[in-house]
Image 1 (cartoon, one colour):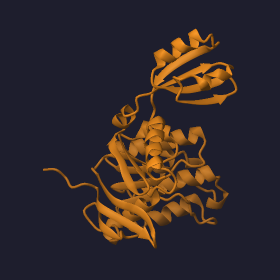
Image 2 (cartoon, rainbow, N blue to C red):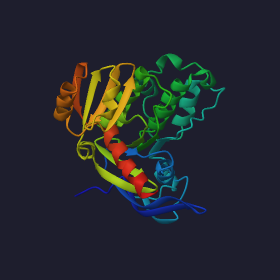
Image 3 (cartoon, rainbow, N blue to C red):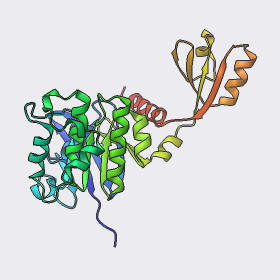
Image 4 (cartoon, helix red, strand yellow):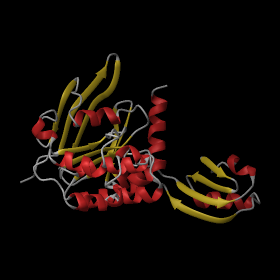
Length: 298
């Protein structure tokens, strides 16, 4: 027997006055999935998460979480979330906050193991107000998992983190999923969504553009990424170059045909070295998808 979806959003519209934030959104997430939710600023990502946490209700359509109403306390206790803005009590110590939050759950996770997983063990006696922004962010995500929730909603969880802290957080999220948890995560770091998520949902202007496996979304983009070192200013004008990014002499090009581009470099006598060719990334796919939508709304 197939278990019901953890998230079941059916034909949801959400308006704020005359502003249409979500437009006929339908989305289901099965137990154990880790789904990346992508979209430009103002696309509707945070609005959708607010509906799933029960902070707002849809203007039309239905939202079910774990088979229940997300505004029902019995449902909310099984959902952990980390919003974009971290609000922690500045004068309380980390261990005091953990103890307070643990009391709200019937079977909380082991606090010592959880804090170790998030690299916070040495900070237990520090006041929250004395934590750095990145430490507060990691602590907020840890608190979202303290109640052993069936579903965790993470809105830009790695904002403000350095690369080591981001890796710590990635590992903790992957460990939670490996234990059977379900995750919906937004991030403007697309490389981390490419690493973490097995499935990607792209929304823009309140509508779902794509809902597919991460690999399938990337495969929609028929381009190659070429990295090389060159000081030649003519690169940007080559017909095979779709876009160019330059940092000093380090150049990254997008091209529909890497072989044709290399032949062009040789025939035009353009000096280069350390050429590397890779397939498209999730960032490339996202840029192409949202560019098409932007054209539709002009």
